[in-house]
Image (cartoon, rainbow, N blue to C red):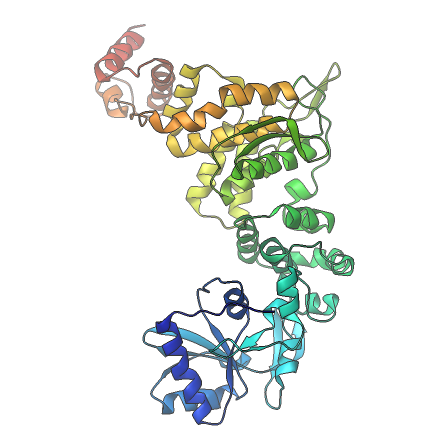
Amino acid sequence: MEHRWEMAPARRRRLARIVSALAAAGHTARLCGGGVRDRLLGIEPADDDLACDAPPERVAAALEQAGIKVVPTGIAHGTVTAVVEGEGFEITTLRRDIATFGRQAEVAFGDVAWEEDARRRDFTINALYADLDGRIYDPVGGLADLEAGRVRFVGDPEQRIKEDFLRILRLFRFHARFGRHPLDPGTLEAVRRWAPYLTHLSRERVGREWWALLETERPRAALEAMQEAGVLTVILPEIGAMPPIPQANAYHDRDCRTHSWHCLFALLEMEQGRYCRIRRSGGPDPDHTAPCPPLARDPLLRHLALFHDLAKPLCHRNEAGRDRFLGHDRVGAEMIARQMRRLCRPRREQEVARAVIRSHLYLLKNVEPHLQRRLYRRVGEERFALLVALALADGAAMQPHVWERCARTLLPLRERLPEWEAPPPLPVSGRDLIERGVAEGPAVGALLAELRAWWEGEEPPPDRDACLAWLDRRLAE
């Protein structure tokens, strides 16, 4: 396999100081892991790690002898950090596992060959080593797998998973990034067997891996494989264990779980510049496809597309043969906020998710321009753009007539949105009400909400004098 190998001159200079210092003491150091993998793909890694055949104490001594600062970041696991020109480089001694406990391991150093160190790593594409000139050392066939777009564990999948349950989630993230072929059936069977042990991972680690997967360019195959292997049932039961509740009504033609997945698939098509209705089989409908401006990749929007109807099973009622889900937007808003907290997402994202799910039906029900502008003024440009994209994807996973209405009334919004003025703030506040004799407390909030509803319904938005006049009339009643 011919490969590219490029490195920024400053990074190369710093690494060369480390490698030369270790070589002067009789030790060999090579680049390793994801940095090698990414460089072979023409991607500049955020950092470069090294592996060395000397124990950590000797590594530290050799570096300090050369005047390089050393930080003992993980001596027990064989890792020190060399700091050169303000940049840190982790150097880990070749090692073997003596015992593993989920995410914990007892390791040993000394007389460990490069091949043995490679065999304890997670995936073959991460078990590559290289010198600074790009000469590759490949003990387990990772180079061929990288070229083929194949993600597989080093050795026995079950053994690798038992050593560290996080590797299950990393498998699917790397499959989304690098995989061009289905995962091996034996690998999926091992994942299925050990998926229940994902509950032993911290919420922070699960959340980080999930979000990193959503940030990849092509997540669909990996997500479908996660569902098939039972992983989502454990980490995100709102979709993994969602019952296929029927949706027999004038808008839907598939159950709520299938609809949720197809909403995400429609969003992924929009990222490619195609607004497609998704057939019940999961593929795009060529008879209901229109070009659209490519949608920017947004992990939050992808997440909301998959989980926008997470409350439907709780709100399901069948009335005279018609399936209804009254209140699922309100209930779902609170459920998504709790889920986002569980995934350790920032507070701001939690609030955005709650607001978007609370209003995700609005644009499907209200197609008149003045009502669209009312929502825009209420939620602001960022949330409105999310709501437009989500409503389009939602409608693309329904019956053809819903897609047609969305293409006619909502698709133009994505082009017209930048022409709209930013929503002005409500020109009065609680202080104005108190000055007019309204007692402090719940009455102020209730009256302000009533005023805001009136103000948002007017076109153009009334100014301060008009709002105060409305207040005076209301208080005189």
